[in-house]
Image 1: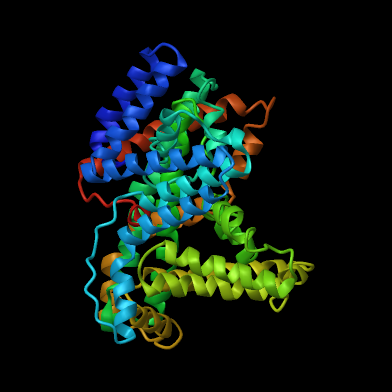
Image 2: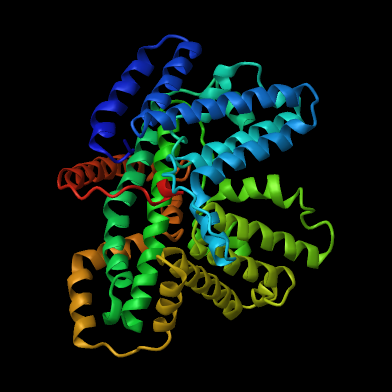
Length: 470
């Protein structure tokens, strides 16, 4: 089951909201929501649910040890959680690496359960925080299980911290206005996924599977389309998670802040998958020394973080090279070889910095999307060489990039930049005469968008969220 499935939208979610409203007291609501998260996750595989519960139990026990002053608990939590992640995601990748060294070892390919990268990272952060500050742990297994299996976040984050989550268990803000705002945010994310990301996927898939018909114009269009597809898909999921949390009275952390408006790679990672970036900062970058040991050590620490971040995304060298690309650019920015701060002292430099960041990110996503390293480099080579547009390429372009699809792609590009929010803030500023009309128009558009999404679901063509594979 997924947030954009008919079963969730028209049965599971309405029933959950009704039962949650009827439940009396926060404890009863918490039990209901914990069970709902476990049931929702069980729609994947029952063995995956057993794994999630076992992970919650192990991390809770390690948290108790950490709260008791056992200094080895955090290290043991990292080893156990990373071992679980390695077995679920990287056995085949490890076997391939050994084969390159001439060691033949048959290792099974295991289908990783959905969300394993997220609930293992949650487990590590929980135990580490309990070791640093015992008051941020819990003696209640129920609270730990609820945190690990929290419905809005269980499949693809955001990676919340237990201390922030626990503070909302006993008391959280509930109001009709907050619920309505959450529903509007959820519908916006649904529209991003079903309508806009889907349109971008049509063009991206056509370009990345074009074979000999691929030329530079189509390759650039495909790279731009995939960058939008990935952002609209994952930010759409994050909008749905935040909106669902608000409907249930919880505040989930924000995960995106218009990353394609970034002025550097460093700025991009302050805006893209924010909760993961903060996780790597707090539990890897800072323990490695952060920026406290000189510029060369800072650059090396950043490089290590980005390579491991790439590997976190999947057992494929394409992800490792994607992480290495960001590691290189981030290190060059730290060393002032790419002195973006200096560029931004002039209007032309500010424009250049944004073009540089967007171009660097888009080129990196080509390798991220490619099925293998060879295909990724071949695609990148085509982007800078084959500028002709033969009949086969024109036909492929005409079939995939019709006027309707291009219009949706343009709309996706527009909402990926902070243009509409600035307009909305001006129209709905507190005390502004247009605020009631702007709010009413926003809810009316949300209802219309929900109808369009329902029609898209009815037409079939379901595609899972991209980040479910991570």
